[in-house]
Image (cartoon, rainbow, N blue to C red; front, top):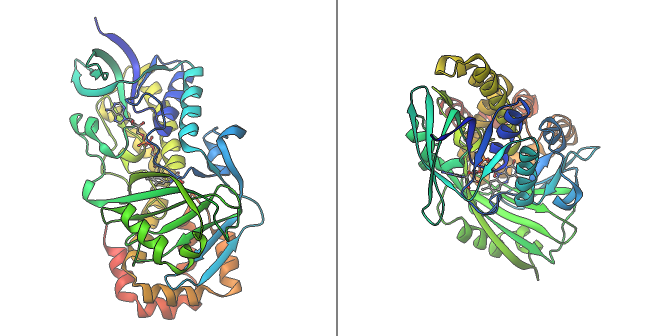
Length: 409
Ligand SMILES: Cc1cc2nc3c(=O)[nH]c(=O)nc-3n(C[C@H](O)[C@H](O)[C@H](O)COP(=O)(O)OP(=O)(O)OC[C@H]3O[C@@H](n4cnc5c(N)ncnc54)[C@H](O)[C@@H]3O)c2cc1C
């Protein structure tokens, strides 16, 4: 007989761990299957998280995981190098070691009672008699077969298990490719401000960033719809007027890469005995690519919904639909608005973006951004900016693009 679990989660990264922690806390026999020997690797994130988000996830990390507690705001950098600074009165985000953060979350789930099968890759998932049978294989090709009352895919953008279970993960032709370097001996960094570089020239369809770990050390990266993000980043470091200055005499000591779903949620995130959580569900912010807070919130909802369904003995799609209803209530509007903002920004040329920055360069407007800007909910700010009269001439001039952005997916 194969071992039977209440909940099996494929993927032991940030969002899978949230599902596992909640399911275990609910008294479910819970198993996480993670393919990599050390959770969090290969690293694929900047580890920038809001305090409010971390508190909502009950995931404030210990000191040894935090590089920088003091993110107060951003320097927004136009294509021509013009810089606008928005700074909140209180610090609102921190920069963490993402790989260690994943390990911290997984340990939390295990300490609540979740079991771990690692390093094993879930290779086959099939429904059988109202249960899900999962085959997992390690690097020596040793195989185990397990059963779950509910299977949760938190497998990231790859979406292979999702596909086997009849749901679709994010479209691969719409992913953003990202490259990030860990850099020391940088100049001109403010430890309290993240730098966000709007530039079609170097980062088409996304943006570049410098996320300070200290006064001289930072994560420097960019995302783009083009493959070869690292090449684009090298070019940006060499030629962008502001980034080039920051990188004078600096040393790159580590490089990572990853892919980000930015098209918003996938069509369906539940089916019989099955849920999707995190990047595989497209629960990632189209504006910034952040997916740990929103995916984590959805993960907690999934853990609770799965547990309730198992207690009631009803694990069919109809009974699990409430998962989608609940996570959508939390974030669907925000994600939709962010998608429209992303569309609009992608359509603006660098020259138009420079003009937009000129318009934003007004104390009243920057105050508005400081007040309403929220790392996890940029939809709110988007609505405020859309309602700002002084920006209307700009919207009018780019109305075709604005309408196209709203109309397209
Ligand atoms: C360069 C970059 C910077 C980013 N910066 C930020 C940031 O600052 N803040 C933020 O919130 N988000 C950021 N993101 C996004 C964030 O990394 C993702 O949203 C987040 O990692 C999604 O978590 P997840 O648990 O859904 O998936 P993943 O982190 O992708 O985890 C999936 C896990 O599943 C495992 N897995 C996959 N398939 C199987 C299988 N078949 N069997 C067993 N295990 C399997 C993988 O090994 C992995 O551990 C960034 C992304 C990139 C690429």
